[in-house]
Amino acid sequence: MLTCPTLQKKEHVYSLVQKMICLYKIVGQVLFKQIFPNGTLEVKINLRGLPADDQQARAIHIHQYGDLSQGCVTAGAHYNPQAVDHPGHPGDLGNFVSEQGVIRKFMRLPEAKLFGGHSVLGRAVVVYEKEDDLGLGSDEESKLSGNTGERIACCVIAQSLYMPQL
Image (cartoon, rainbow, N blue to C red; front, side, top):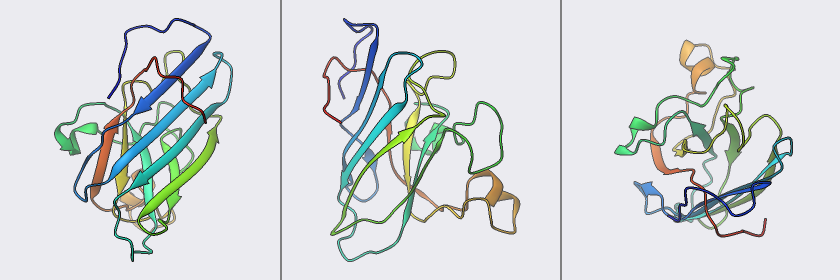
């Protein structure tokens, strides 16, 4: 993981995740880029190492803490600074199906930021064993986490001097 305390250009913030703690030898990058404080956050996910013959959709979420001291369980709950019902908070990145064990996705997250008091910097990205039920399940856990099952990979969102191409 590449980290730095400050960036040379304050109007650009880049985040690079190069190493993931995981159960399935999942490796890859989750890149976050936001140009200017009021700009839209762009995210590029590039992960490999999922079972090649598996068509299970998997949820990927941003979590409260970048604490991976005990694996993915210490990352806390979904990042949800406004305490809104699931799935409408900045921590929800969505459900993804791998192709030949690889997940590649580009998205824009207007509700999440790299700047300000609600920044996602220092938080964790978590990959789950199951898809998110989008809060439509009949139990309380559905409204909190989407019944996504075990956390199978995670990483910390950190600043980088590397300027990725999204």
